[in-house]
Image (tube, rainbow, N blue to C red; front, side, top):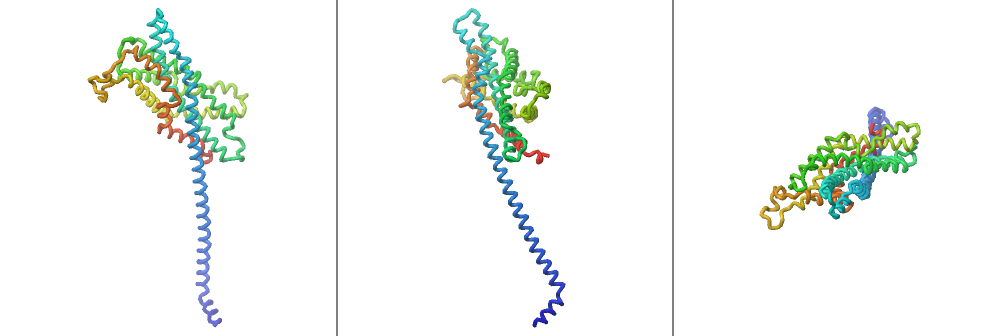
Length: 362
């Protein structure tokens, strides 16, 4: 029996060898495939966890952005009111001075200037902090991902503080420069207009459009200048004395400036300004509605063009708008800006750019 089996094996030796090789190959190939599949699953799981961690960090960073904007609104409002102090003019008017008309003319320019500046600076504050905190957020994510293996942190604590302090330019020299430009545009648009001249809401909207056009197209400086100081020349002179933290801060500021000068930023800021001035007009519209019992239906499309108010009555209305525009809570304008889809998408793109390792970017 054994000899017959052995003879059978000898006769079919090649077939057994081939079959064994095939079976062995399939076995090892299966093992290899299992190993690769396991590695792929582990890599996908790791990528999913990393993506979820980054998404959580991004969303947390946006909440920080929102809280920071709200915390900066009171000092912004105070800075505007301090430099454009209409309250002192209204107090003078109550004393019935001899130059009453002259004071009214000053109040006209100051009132319009500070409300328009409030819209511009609030929009700028939202956009600037969105850029800065998402640049920092991206670098902090990379620092946390690298852990202790990172030789030099991309955003050390002292750099973060120094970098974020640059927002003071918007509340200082930038705001002063913006006021000068806006005040000139207001003067050109409304300076010669009589206090008795009546304006409808649509006519007032046209005046604001002309002022915006002069501020945004007629100014010698781009709007981004009012948001971030251009200190490149001064820094170049001091380069030899800069510490490592200073150099990192300079890099962050340059990256911020690049973002501010990008076409995408121009689109986002313009969308914010459009929303801001639309909100301002919505606030003013409450004072231009036909009185109860008026023959003109309040729901008519052109009803707001029927009601006109003398400029002298519009001045106190627009003078008080700063308390609505720069209000930390509740503020419809600020909520509109923080929830704006274009602002959110731009913030996500900034965070994505700065939270991606350089080797992946390359």
